[in-house]
Length: 147
Image (tube, rainbow, N blue to C red):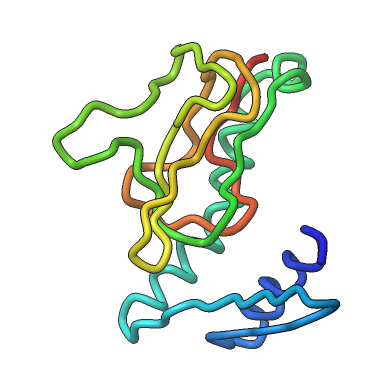
């Protein structure tokens, strides 16, 4: 099972409002599960639908020539974005900071698990695209990096 197939399963999960999908193929089992809480589900859906517009507006505010070489760090899962390891700690990175490959840049909380998100490339953080403690979707851009 490759990443594209897993993304398609995640899309089906959201599209049909399912809470769980499990598939087994050639001895590999994948289970995707999300928890829904009554009042929280509506704001999360609204924030998720607003996120692409926010990314587009940030991207359109930057000159097109400068955008061409920027790389994005995307959310590998649906969850809540945190810039720091705890509420009273300093953020992992700020705009203008240099990051190394493998350096933790944020945390995405999913199903009560704190997942450290690492940079896959070295570079300078040009823009943080998500506010702290905001819901994020799978594949949503979190940071713009200049390699």
